[in-house]
Amino acid sequence: MLPLQNRFRVFINNRWLVFVAAMWIQSWAGIGYLFGSLSPVIKSSLDYNQRQIAMLGVAKDLGDSVGFLAGSLYGVLPIWGVQLIGALQNIFGYGWVWLIVTKRVPTMPLWVMCILLFVGTNGETYFNTANLVSCVQNFPKSRGPVVGILKGFAGLSGAILTQIYAMINSPNDTTIIFMVAVGPIIVVITLMLIVRPVGGHRQVRPSDGLSFTFIYSVCLLLAAYLMVVMLVEDFVDLNQTVITLFTSILFILLLLPIVIPILLSYSSKHKPAEESLLPVPQNEECSKSGQDVNEVILSEVEDEKSMEVDLLPASERQKRIEQLQAKLFQAAAEGAVRVKRRRGPRRGEDFTLMQALIKADFWLIFFSLLLGSGSGLTMIDNLGQLSESLGYDNTDVFVSMISIWNFLGRVGGGYFSEIVVRDYAFPRPVGMAVAQGIMAIGLFFFAMGWPGVMYVGTLLIGLGYGAHWAIVPAAASELFGLKNFAALYNFLTLANPAGSLVFSGIIASGIYDYEAEKQAHMSPPQNFYSFLLRMLGIAPVVETTLKCNGTICFFLTCLIMSGLCIIAVMLSLIVVYRTKIVYANLYGKSNT
Image (cartoon, rainbow, N blue to C red; front, side, top):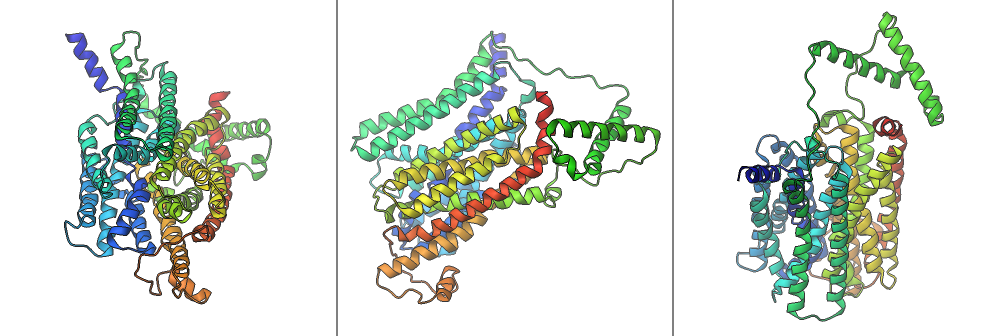
């Protein structure tokens, strides 16, 4: 009995169990991506126009991104407490929205609805913060795959929840809001005690690579299965028994990753190769002092080397840097030079949020993320209206499809960006540039409105948008450290609602309502100045639910955002150029 108890203790404290539990919670942590399915229900029930729906979308995006409180509570409350607060916020916000939409309570003003959506969706930030920080600490040498997979499951939650809703088969469209309200708290209460740091850096095993391969295989199988199921349900009229069978298979696929911690904990063939704990040397003060001097001298190399050195071939540049480093060491030892003390950390070391805010690289990443992910989020939020304008009746299938591609973009972004940095020591933000280029093409497809564009567009937008949220957190942890990762990550996520506020709240909704009024033979603005006032919300809008039909509804919006994505590519490439030396120092030596 004793060995069995020991094995159960090992199982409970296994970092892979923490990772799998975090994946399951993340499967309910992306309810904001269901807004494309929720917005038509809210719009018809409360008689909102597109601008009002856009304001709800911006409030939802703000809630999904403003995670400062979650980040600050991470070190104060236990992790299960952080998760529980998020679940309670979720059920309060979306539960109240459900009561309003179903007329069980009096209709509230728009600003109250915005607050409720903000509070409800803000619960996601607690899940994301607790899961990401715990798992990154447990897998410090696999940041790209871990972030990509966890963020991927958050993106896939839209498709998962849509399939669960299809199994429920409620004749009332508002049931999906009720499911969004109560589902996360059930999952979180079940799993919240499992997700925590468990000293994962001491659980390194030779089989870890095989375990990640298995997780990736499950991810691909899950995405392929959901894609096939969604297409079959869209084109074929299935009975409820078949849909229930499809959903049951989905649950089995979601449970598959639990095989890894079970095998690692209960199989005698798998023994952890723990990192040895080195004894503290007696001359710790001397060693620490010497290490500080070495680090400062290495930073002096960055200050002393000329710009021409960066332009030399890699081998010649390394030789020049080593020569300069040797001279600085000798001069410092002889007292010929006085080594300057740095005022702050250098890229690759631990930054506080305030220290990161004065770095150009941090702001380049932020604005690149704002333009890229803000454009993608605008299309996700307006997917219901976009598909309706192009003549598609079933909007849920496209919400599910973009969720699946979003998932694959996150998983693939983490995987391929890890190859870029590990095998080639090249800056991870190059993946951002590629993702933003893909999004620019997808937005151009949406603008053209060609046949089948919804299938191609959701693929490209989903892949590109998803890749951002695997690459950016990992790159931020590499350039600015893990010590204050929660604060840095939650600040960068503000780029999402900032982009959505402008692109969706002003541009997309303003143009949509303008074209809808024209088609309704009403009197839209007669000149560009009046049109601009209408877009900015200064001029009054018609308080009537209007629908726009045709490519023209989102033509100009998609062209504008496609151009912004191209600008984002340029910003990302600037980050790549500026951080080549940093990544060479972080990863290059391991390959020599």
